[in-house]
Image 1 (spheres, rainbow, N blue to C red):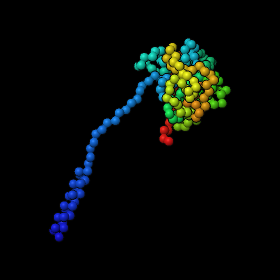
Image 2: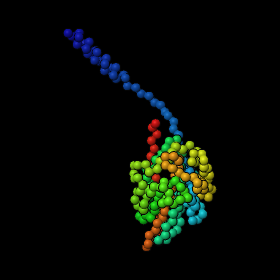
Image 3: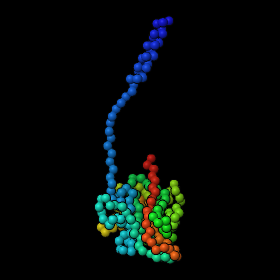
Image 4: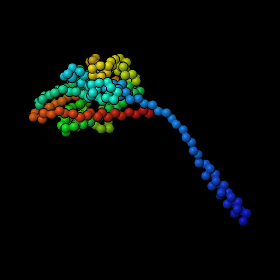
Length: 231
């Protein structure tokens, strides 16, 4: 009986020993790569179309230069007074260059002053007002999210081709504007369709009411994108 107990004890010790020697360690490394590029060359990029009141594109680099550390974009909408409306039917375009569709879910306009007179649409026909374009979706309405709403697809940008020199498949060139420092097109026959086209036009209206205070209005437009890459 004593021998059996010793064998049992030895067996347990062997199991414990085998458990302690099973721990394994390793080190390795894996590389990564990504690039910081001009906003007009990004995988989801912004391009010019309409000109503002100063003759340059509505959308442009904020600094007015192409320095690598000053590539923030801004939209210049001009100077307007109370009871005036200004509408840019194609203030800028959004182009998808990724190799899968990308959804635009919604936009939020942040104001620095707490005053918001802006309306924003996504639509397909750059030369038409959104109200005359049956593709249009109102996605921001002077302080409120419009369109389908947060978390849903307001507009789907079709698969791109990873080439910032063109859009609409390969049918439309997007050359570089050396004054506004953005890529652009002026072809108003380039119409977009959700789920079909790799781009969409953004209409912006400033609708100033009676007795509006004289002040500069500044802020940010934040677009929200969503994509599923599983196939």
